[in-house]
Image (cartoon, rainbow, N blue to C red; front, side):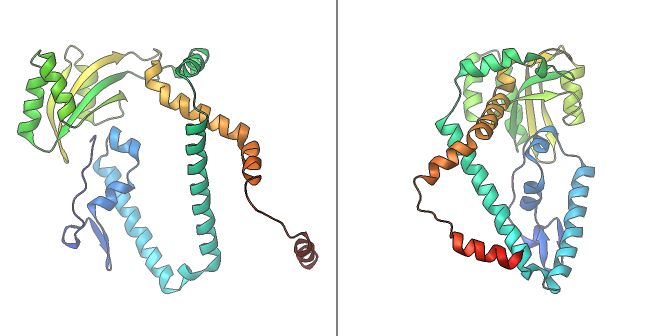
Length: 262
């Protein structure tokens, strides 16, 4: 499974229920990590998610009956956690927009740390098309295998398509076998899943132990450098913000409180 499409929220079409609380398809999909949506989810994994939701909902409803949801300490911790998420989002946004790194710097980092980007298994760069209709998937397959580059370009811009790097053993078994065991072929599909039909074009295959390309790891390098930039400049950045804000610490009250507590 590469993609999911959310259905309409309906109590008549729920996945699980505890009392009057419903686990719908859309909620279940949100529970699946993004990485899992790409590499595939089997029945065992879904059943585990559903089982955990049922367990947690039973416990939560029981806790609410005893009014633990009104606990002031829990409310405070929830507020603090929310504040931290917002702050971290802002820091990432600020440094990405204000600092940034040129392609030259990113490539220099890649070249200097190339041994960190060796492949642990066979992998492939694929172009993935997805649709809910079999006839449309068959049409896409015919167009991209026609040998007409103009038609192929129109397919890429007109249908749901993305380019992904996948490792052997990390996607649906049928797709994994097609890509890594039938090496002479480069086009596969339509492949049916519970959510629709997939057509795959293998652009490149890579052996275990080879180096990942710069384009494959560029985003990871960028995030790593941004994170380092935040750590190195956090104090200076916060101090600069303090200069633009009216703030004050009441030392008298602080001293009084200190005496009361200690």
